[in-house]
Length: 219
Image (spheres, helix red, strand yellow):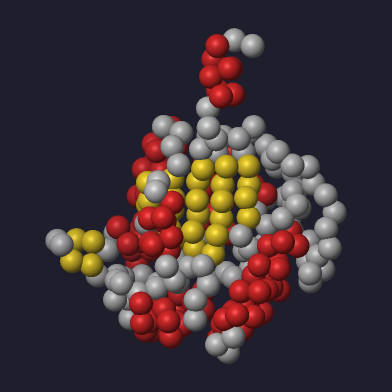
């Protein structure tokens, strides 16, 4: 083994944290506890002239402008945390592709919170209507999961698991992202009914059902 290969082998595996949740769910506090660089694209686009004004159009603009920043950070092989509101499957794809290209381990987490609590504690003053709209658009069917690209592909092989809803994740894309639309709809309904404990139980159960399911990566 040459010196370059040995150095790569000894290097700690960098992590990319993708933290999802509606305003007031606690994404910022969670990311600070991780101690790594935190990128909050839609929030950063809302800070201008010493003031914070959140508008929905900034959410889409941030998707374009902050991609280069994260690419540059990944080249340094450092831990990065991205906190986002919706972070839908189509947007997660981009981060997973970059993580795969840079041999990162990805940790995806969703913080669940009821709407009343969100409205009370969101620090940025996102109005009640906007919070409800974000909740309605949130894809709650993405369970917490780890996708390891540190060796260029997953460390674990695919195994058969019992599917809680008989839903088989799509193996053809999404870079290994696991999701369950049926579970997502039920979790959202439980939150709407202020049954947060049951929503959390289902979120955890869904993640555990899929935790060893590793479809192949298509090149």
